[in-house]
Every structure is written in C-alpha cells, then in structure tokens.
Length: 348
Image 1: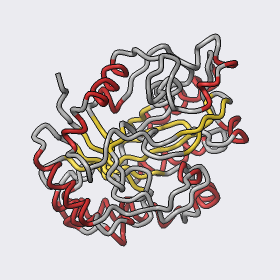
Image 2 (image 1 turned 30 degrees about the horizontal axis):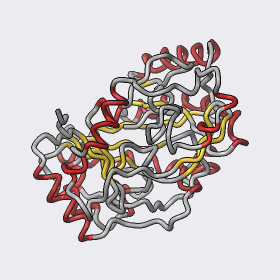
Image 3 (image 1 turned 180 degrees about the horizontal axis):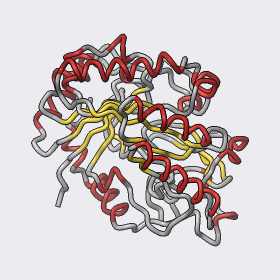
Image 4 (image 1 turned 30 degrees about the vertical axis):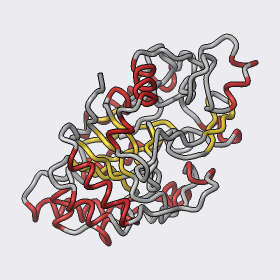
C-alpha cells in the first residue's frame, strides 16, 4: 500500500546570500543553482494535482528568498499550507503584504545575539530583528493570524548561553515558539563543540531545565532536542509522509541526502552524498513516490529495520561508517548514523 504524500520540502534554490560558518554548503562541489522556470511550472502543476498534499515547505539547503521563482510560487501554491524557512535577512526586501498573508508559518534562523550573529553569519542583529518587527506590522495590517513566526536556534558550546537573552527579546517581539536544534559538525576540529552525548548528560539536562523555566516566565514554548542517545528512532520525513525536491529536480528522501557533504557523528568523520529516487525531468513525482525502491526504503525506516551505528560494539573497526553508500545489511542509503532520527537535529 502506498501512503499518501502529505508534505513536500521544495528547494527553489541551493544558493544563499550568506556564508555562515557552520553551513553544510561549504562541503559542496557543484556550483549553486536556482530552480528553472520550466521546472518550477512543472512542480507547481504536479503539486496542485496531489489531493493528499497538505503542506509545502519553501526552504531546503539554500535561501528561498534568493530565488526569482519565490513570488510566483507563493501565489501559485495558494490553497496548500505554506511554510517558509529563511535566514531572515531579505524579508523586508522580498516579502510583500500579500505574500505574507498567504504564508502560514515563517521560521527564522537566529543562533545568538549581536556579536555571535556577526561572527558566525555576518548578519547585523538589529537589522534582523527589524525584519521581525516588519512581519508583525504586516500581520496587523492584514488583520490575520498568519503567518505564525518561529525561531530556530542551532545550539553549540559556543552559543548556548545566548539563548536566555534571546528568549527575553523574542517575548517582547510576540514570538511564541523557539525550536532548539543541535549543531552537527562537518569537520573533525568542530567535534568538541557539540552539547549532546552518547551517555548520561546531566549538565545539558540541567541547562535545558533552566531554559524551560525561563521560557515559562517569558511565555515561550520551546521545542528541545535530545540531550543523550536514546533507543527510539523516528524519521520525521518518513513518519510525516514527506519528500524533498531539490532545485535540480531530484527527489531525495530528506535533508541529509539532498546534497553531498560531510558530518562528524560522535567523533567519527563521514562523507555524505546525494541520494535520489528519481528526477522530475524524467518521471512524475507520484510515480517516483510510489516506486518500489522508495516504498522499500520508507518501510525499512518506518519499521526500524536498519542497523544502529552509535550503539554498535563493532563501530570503531567498521569501514561502513565512513560514508552513506550502504549499511551492514547491504541496504542503501545508509541511515544507521542519522542524528535527525535520534532527535539531536530537528528540521521544521
């Protein structure tokens, strides 16, 4: 039985106007690319025809507001729930009153206060916060509850202490949701910057408890990642009947397999590569979604019929942990080291 497709992550571009220090894009070989007009029209036509499709996330590994297609995509996809993930720096330049009214949720990435945002992202903090003010003003003018505004914070040892003053500011700006995700290193020299651990992690649990208490005082709802390795695994893409379309039309199962790159998982360096079940230039989306290979993959992940590298006794001597080509059962791609499924890394 083919599960209905409920959610699509649509990458309008894999280019970005920023050069953030911790971005996955530093590992890419290919030049950035915008989705073409022809592909964009094809995607819209297909997405509008899928009755089960509820939510479209305009985001991905690039900054969607950079894409020339963004305005027409918001207009063309009206009727679906539209989510926008953005670094927030182009909001005042690119978002109009009508566009804002058509978007249900905007998630803005903020990883610290003034000095941290300038050091890590090259972003002037006050200008970014003024974009939040701009959105709040448009919401008042539109007399609508939309869009809801969430903030996503990627936490590491270097910036986690800045969550407290940020929460104070967000409460003043009428932001009610803060999503904390862990930093996922791409280089071995970043391995010690993580806050999560394989085993019991009392210091981080205590810090999360302080953050939670502070959020109650400020009227904020905070979504927390895990502090330590748990047995439970859950892929948000598979469980949510979601897929990912890259700017080149590749249909990937998730963020992790959307592009090449690297990651460091509990001190172990791993090479990532794109894994696609098909390209929209060759096959329709629903044909790719319903293919035997994609069905087999989703069933395997949903039922947890795949190995678990972080708690395997043989992991230190295993060569399969060096990449994601296939796991020790011979299945591809290799999801056995996925920190998204362990709820260390959270995607909207």
